[in-house]
Length: 477
Image 1 (tube, rainbow, N blue to C red):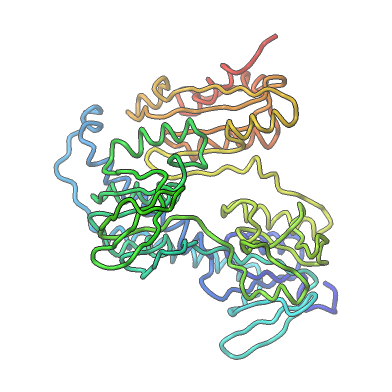
Image 2 (cartoon, helix red, strand yellow):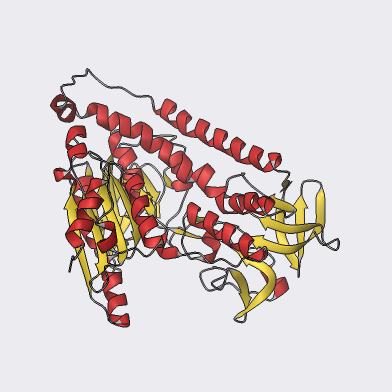
């Protein structure tokens, strides 16, 4: 380490991205500190991935055990199934505490200095930290910003944290209202609809765009509506804007036509979950001290190396990762970005391949996806001059799915017609979140269906839905 700096690397933000960067920095021999003003682990550990998956796991068991028809098809009979809301909530809270502790201990074990307080840039290679005991300035050869994001609440919606709330409060499962409106049909809205309906709540799902699940591949969205929405106690309002939401008992929601903004319906529900996405937490980071301006949405401008930009040029020794960059708002994407930045700092430049980063919705059944949707692939094909094709295979024909009695779902593989390169894979079905990793690895290697068609998959396994897709897509000329 250069003697002129307190640290080789200082990371502002101890979420999954900052944590991954810190661990890799130590492996690369860098003296590292991490600054965190709130909860160690950030959104993912405390208010996102971890507690929500605990709720989905517990509520999913309730759904499964109450599905008498499915169990009878397996020769199983059960009596009444009961649950305790408090017990399910405790399961999520206890998991958060454990993983938060594990994360903190891993940093301490590797001698990463943990500084509790608000960190902000104080000038080139300088950080000021406001702690309970005062304010101090530290220096670093490189600074990495990993401040994360917060839920976005649209104008006109008043959040009280009790009857109208975001996912930050929903993961606490402090109540189970009989009738809940969910604003937004992205993966957050879908996952909480899964939890609430499994535990007996009725849902009204409100989507401002012209179809449900607008960011999903159209075929997957159609299947998800058939499997996850229509059979359950969920009614939908598509193309409708929650113009005004007033907390109380009841919660009053003014629904307007999304195009005309004219109020068409008044809903009165017991609670409302606002699942309208997230925005970067980039206020008060001191970016102005080094001439950096965020864009109009608050995202930090970065180049492909994740160097922070000022006027289009990299600011020396200043980097940003995670939700605040607007690249991909996923915990594992932030972690990959952190590792890439550390590699670049260490003299081994590395960039993140975003096309090969998978994502999942942990509904029952799950949704997993990686790469381009079919419309995106066709748009790319028109630009670059190639044709796109897609094949679909069905869990109904998979031996393992039949053995499990879980045959709902499809796997869709999108590829180039000329060379067979896989451009995107989308799966809805049992264990889709695990199955998608094989496809992600194939896209990372830019593999062709013509090659993958000859790979051998274990029989009988769910992975054979992809094996069948590769074989259907391959050309043997």
